[in-house]
Length: 268
Image (cartoon, rainbow, N blue to C red):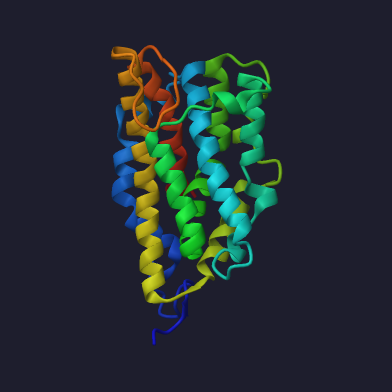
């Protein structure tokens, strides 16, 4: 039988024994892939339109709906309980506010997502039912990314869209977190205290890599969706009906998803 062991650092001082450090190392390659795209640099320069942002919010809504419903359902699971912070981190309500602001009260009828978003959602549902400990990987990469980049990205988005107030930018706000840096330290400490077998740790690391890949695929699928709808007027598999102009401009906005993922692990 495998020995259970904490993800905290061992007395030997092994730098790589923390689960958070292991995730950082395991996902480094995918982080570099996301970080070094021209699209990422373009977003940081403020090149985003309202149409781009609205469609991105739709995908984020579907992803967080699945993630948070599965976290809620598994809140008492020994691997989930230590990193379960719904009051501080939950994004679903803020996304609903943003979508209502931009789309109106019937926003649920207007949500548009590509096939990759559905696959991401289905993966979260599957592990929530079958292997809840793997939710740790998705929660860590998503929430700490949003928390790390929230203020900066919120200001970039506000300026790019010419928004005078904070309405439509709730996603970037964490009113329940007074100090992002201290909270991230607490979160990592809680996550590193989770007791996992060696096999379970390996599975969580793989799932973290897959979480990056899921987001990159959402980005790629949004490009494909726009290309099809713009050039042929046809609807790609898994996407709800819509037509968007200017494919290259649209893809820039999607980079915020990759930004929040990457900044989670590499921002102190």
